[in-house]
Image (cartoon, rainbow, N blue to C red; front, top):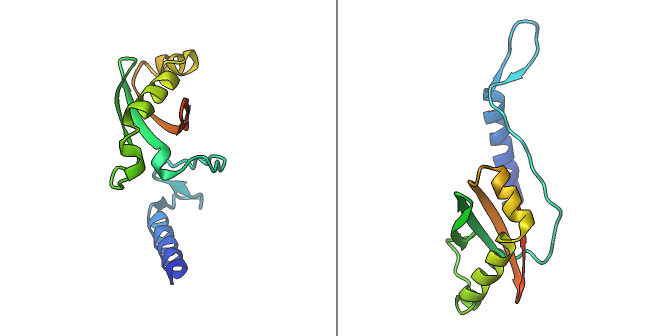
Length: 123
C-alpha cells in the first residue's frame, strides 16, 4: 500500500511537471522552471542522528543544529559539546574555510558527526 501511495504521488508530481511545460511554436518543449538532481554515494555511517546543518555567515559558523530537528535522539543529548567541538574542527580545517571563503563567507553546510573526534562535510 505504501509503495502504491508513493507511485501515485510520483504520478501526481509528473502531472505537476507536465503543467509546467510550455509548447512553443515548432513543437520544442521548454521547461518554465530550472531543476537539478543531486545524488550522493550511500554511506552507512550517516545516520539521522549524526547529521547536522550549519550556517556560515561572514566566514564564521554562526549556527549549528540537528538536521532532523523534529526528531529526538536521546543518546545525543549528553554528547552535544563533543559534537560541537568535532564539527567545529572540521569547519576550521583549511579546506572547508577556503571553500566557504569562495562562497563569499555565506553558505549552508551539512555535516555528519562520525563519533569521538570525527566528522565530515556532507554537502
